[in-house]
Amino acid sequence: MTFRLYDTATREVRDFVPLEEGKAGLYLCGLTVQSEPHVGHVRSGVVFDVLQRWLRHRGLDVTFIRNVTDIDDKILTKAAEQGRPWYNLAYAMHRELDRAYAALNVAPPTYEPGATGHVPEMVELIGELIAKGHAYAAEDGSGDVYFDVRSWPSYGELTRQGIDDMEAASDADPRGKRDPRDFALWKGWKKDTEPATAAWPSPWGPGRPGWHIECSAMAGKYLGPAFDIHGGGVDLRFPHHENEQAQSRAAGRPFASYWMHNAWITTAGEKMSKSLGNSLTIPAVLESYRGIELRFYLLMAHYRSHVEFSFEALDEAAAGFRRIEGFLDRAPAGEQGDLPEAFVTAMDDDLGTPAAVAVLYDTVREGNRLLATGDDVSAQVADVLAMLDVLGLHPADPAWGGSGDDARLTQLSGAVDALVAGLLEQRAQARADKDFARADAIRDQIKAAGIEIEDTPAGARWTW
RNA sequence: GGUGGGUUGGCCGAGAGGCGAGGCAACGGACUGCAAAUCCGUGUACACGGGUUCAAAUCCCGUACCCACCUCCA
Image (tube, rainbow, N blue to C red; front, top):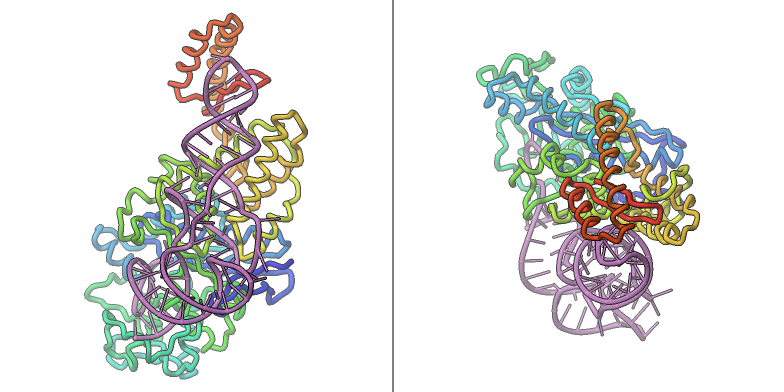
């Protein structure tokens, strides 16, 4: 079976056929680094990380480009409000984003280009579009350059919309535009309100790039005129992706073969950016949950399904994940093996992580059953480790910051182990003496310290 | 107005014509001194109304409600 992927452009699940055999070029529209990332923001990162891992697993040589938008209206506005340079805000938020991705074991892409580092490439592309009659400099002296949507007959093809059916932007400033739907490729510097650091030289005067042009320029630079998969959140389909495709193709570049869009995560039925926000930033959620649990939660729903975020659901996911970990803890350590067929089938079907997770649970249940009867579970351990690994959920992955990388923590856990071991010895003695009141008192005492006791045929063990 | 998506059991969440994905919770049982952990078992769920079919959660028609995007939101 081949890997199949839902393509937004054709609205169907299609076999994935790379442009060049054995290779895959991926481009993900990353974030505008203007505020702390929240749970919704990182979904696309996690989804594309799984996609990347899956394609690699299938033997493809993956080039993965994920950009960051480090200059735009919001960054300028927020920075001004906070009284600091825009580049300082963007850089700080970029570092926050890096931390969030790292905490969720989202592997770094091949390269993470930023808009401000690619102004020459954008200027060149805009020049090409003007030369081909698809763009024009505004005649009002604003220094803006617009893409001429009427000059590109297939404008709207990605989202199946006719130009005349589109609502004219109510908030757009029509000045200098030939058609209200024309979008900015270059925005002239407004010297009264914008800092000089936010302007770059260009043939049309100082200014800064429009939003869409950066992705066309950077995808072209790192992946070439044609590449395999382009993705982002559903909201980006229009106008962002539509515009990217129009301007790239108008410049003679075939652009993406497949379009992949992940659905939203909402809270209380609202977009996260509009709701309570603060409690759902990644750093805030990580105060109560481990990154591995949050990642597991995000993968329990299919990437094209809308997720209504709730801490109850996150609790459930975390509880379920602990059962998987519990099996691994109790089973003898073993080697990672090959993936079960059912898991491969699930993943090949448009990254069916929910069905894949079901296979994971089935394997864990079977492993636990064998464990109870004292049978060999090395096959189950091998399967579980392999599945967790491609999903980026391997508990031993150093990305989770496991013990061992912090000497003090290792010492501390050794100390706790010694203390608990002493208490467990006393409890074992009490149990042997049938002094259950005392045995339970010891267990309660340990529990009060946040440590759980489990009695196993091999003696008591503790977890926290 | 245009375009796209949704409504599944107490909860989360798959599936897309034919044996009830999976998880969390609950209840019963096994194990245990009691627990915990684990295993086994227990549910006639598919918004509503019609229709097609031997067979519909799945296809068709209609209705209701919800959501997203329509020029710088992941």
